[in-house]
Amino acid sequence: MEIIASAPGKTILFGEHAVVYGEPAIAGAVNKRATIKLKESDKGVSIFKSDDLGFEAELNTRTKKYTLKKGRPGIINYILEILSKFHDHSPIEIDLSLDIPIGSGLGSSAAVTVATLAALFKYQKKEFNRSLLAKKAHEIESSVQGIASPLDTRVSTYGGLIYLSRDKKIAKFNTNLKSSFVIGYTSKRGNTGRMVKSVKALKTKYPDIVNPIIEAMGQITEEAKLAIVNKEEYKIGALMNINQGLLDSLGVNTNELSRMVYLARKAGATGSKITGAGGGGSIIACCPNTQDRVFKAINYHDHAIKVNFSKEGVFVK
Ligand code: MEV
Image (cartoon, rainbow, N blue to C red; front, side):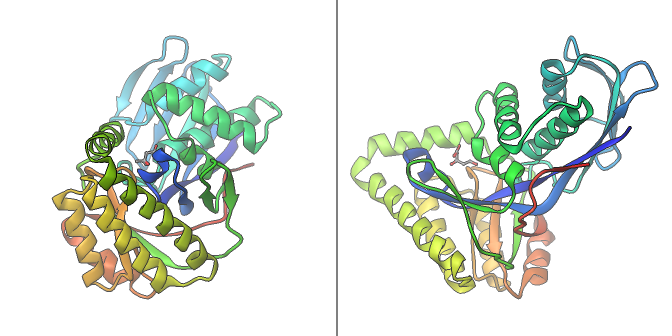
């Protein structure tokens, strides 16, 4: 029996960094996914492979070690962690298809983790629901990374656009925002822990200046919530631009991110900003009728990917 499970990547639209200090945030699942095919292995050993990423490895699920047959599997620690925690070590074969670029800030590790857990639980005929999946996936991300935002695994499990309120309650948007977005990223990855610490240091040094900036970011997210419900793409873009200025003032911008932000606007994006922690990483641009142009402009120097928000969370069959 072969199980197929799939989970989406995500992006943060508003509220990164401010959310650390209790301000609201908006994030959403995108139409780029990780898909896992899982079946019993007839080779007497567990195998993890991906044609998309060009690797194959034999796994020792007891020792969490692996032997490479081909390529370099960046994502393998998540699979080993899942199998060592939740599997009985009988040989299985896991095949990953991924249309979320690794390092693009689109939460590839969360999507792979959620899809793998869903496939494994179904294979084991275990009773599970989305709430359990989101919880277990967050535990796996936390043990592999040391620190992980529950937002990534949550969005990847449930799909859709979500609003995280000040008291950490999650509400799903009841809107079908059809807008097109472009994600831009370079090969320079950001370090979330370091960026969160540097914002904290700035806040401690200049509280009277930085606190109102963080509050203003929260206010932007509140305005954006209304703009999203009313599908006001120009307003969403304008709010993204203001948010970008504030993120820059917190020191999380880089030359590369700035270049992509301005290229996107020049190519017709209604707005563009850093998405995620910054200091490397990625930007997001709102491009209602200009997705191709913005994609080409960014992809000339850096990497770009076209995305739309998607209601579809994890599924398994
Ligand atoms: C990183 O993707 C988002 C931050 O707000 C950190 C976090 O919320 O965990 C910078």
